[in-house]
Length: 421
Ligand SMILES: Nc1ncnc2c1ncn2[C@@H]1O[C@H](COP(=O)(O)OP(=O)(O)O)[C@@H](O)[C@H]1O
Ligand SMILES: O=C(O)[C@@H](O)C(=O)COP(=O)(O)O
Figure 1: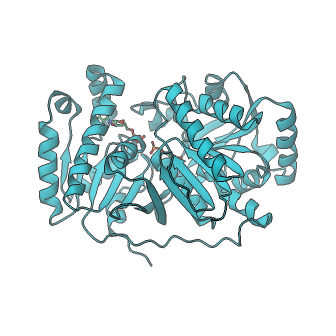
Figure 2 (figure 1 turned 120 degrees about the vertical axis):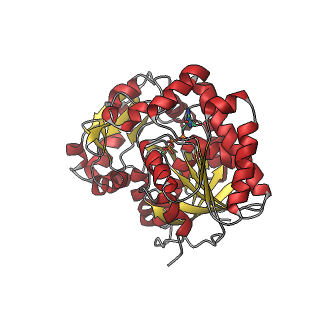
Figure 3 (figure 1 turned 90 degrees about the vertical axis):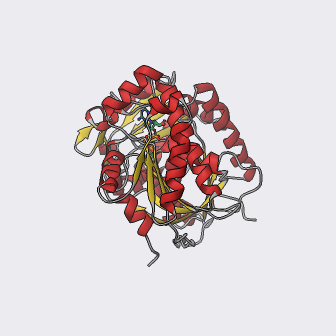
């Protein structure tokens, strides 16, 4: 078995498939593991996807360090910490604390922070994160149920999460080219103790940053900056000329769509689906009272899935989410919905359904854990940042994990009807 080159730790499962898909497109054989694997993995890049974006800081650090240990023992040469392109986190973390812990463990004093993902309209200019034409803090991310993002200045956001220095590497510096940027990173690696938030507005800039980051032990960011990494290994003769390999065998059966994301795009996708197809709405307040709605939803889904694809969703507008959180508490409301969707998926799987489209990062984490999925092979991209995947152990399941704001309005149907060319 060849040693893997790149070891990645993703703070949620959808983020993991987004990154893995980017690496596959760059020609790296990539496997995404859900949690730290117990057996060796044969791949050029390994993505260990965790559910650490919103858990306690201590748990996020513990799990990330276990993932790092696995990746180091496997022989990885470089490490990547993947978080959301909208920098989803609270003031308490977990991006800063996890990155700090990874730096300590890798004995490195400098890394970059690069969440830009222009393919999905996330750009960073003078350290400020934009979503489309709006600052992050004016975008729908300000109302995220678990990680409301109300400050677009990433230097400031990260400073609240770490005691290390946070610097800005502006787009003018990036435009000087990979060689100058590499010199800067190398001098910062010797002199600085902390992070450089790196501007990027275009993919071209992300390739420059990826090239310049070739010697960094640890890179942090979203999937955009990973685009340039496969080429670094090719240049060093460690990876053969990249060739995309994303052929997988997809289930042709009916699919269960599970939506626990309340992001603006998921809400539009749910509304679009309901115009012509069946859906069952879960209500967190009813779920908190008894199991009745879960049982009803399972029976409804099994009945529908015998003839067509069906959606079970808890997605709701920001006012309804705030109201549910006021009554139940933020974490409890989230957990109740995640656990209900997970139980429904488990019961539906027992009836032989092998195709799932899941909207939401936390939601995907909860559902895949319940489905007992340990690792994913990455297939073709359905929408930017969202590939079809198949489970690699047990009875094969086809799984599309969709980040909250990714995909077009008709994403659910597009995913279900996707056919290899
Ligand atoms: N109606 C609702 N009220 C309160 N919380 C909800 C509701 N529906 C879903 N949630 C919770 O909101 C969170 C959404 O997060 P996630 O699944 O990561 O979506 P996204 O990918 O959009 O960030 C989950 O914890 C989910 O359980
Ligand atoms: O980087 C991104 O935007 C995605 O890969 C991602 O992590 C999105 O997270 P969710 O919206 O919570 O699924």
